[in-house]
Amino acid sequence: MNARTLFRPVAAALLAAGCLAAHAGPVDALTWTVANTDGGNGVATIAPDSLTLVSADFTGSPDQAFVPTLLTATVALAAGTTISFDWAYTTADDGGSNNDVFGWLLDGQFQALSAGDSFDPQSGRFSLVLDHDAVFGLAMNSVDGWGGSATAVVTDFTAVPEPATLPLAAAALGGLLLAGKRRRG
Image (cartoon, rainbow, N blue to C red; front, side, top):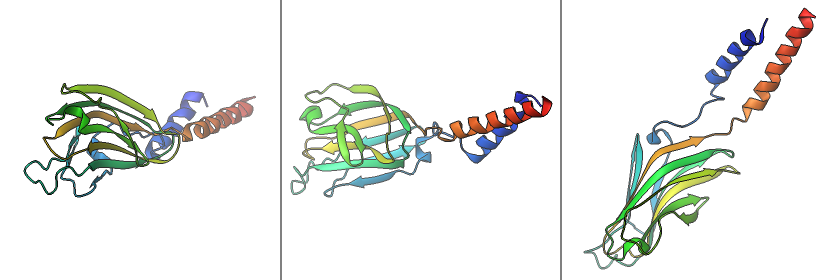
């Protein structure tokens, strides 16, 4: 029995068991949790090929204005997962990007992606490897909830888990190859 004959059923079994699976498909295939803090009216739209966040804006409702709100879309992911995505940000807020900040969350801690002091469109590529099981999220921090909203669109989102079973599979395959070699020899 040669290595190719042994490898095919092992690889097929790993694929069937989901051990080699990764999320590189539709964004909406993940289980996202969407939330607004402090009565925010921000909107998250989750589609197969994108996730869009529109910040809170209470222009015309003075009783709600100037209350900071945070719009989040979060998902639980395992340690070793590599997260990557492209993002594009625009703002219509009369205070520019200072008033509606787009960023990411890791276990509730916010990190900005959009730069402050700008009225210009912004974009970039983000990548992170999780060093622990975590709740990862995308967020729009509306500092004032007034004067217009901002929009962030995330595309090409991937969350690829570390193939923790690959070392075990390699050891098993090595053992099978060694056993086959001993039988012949």
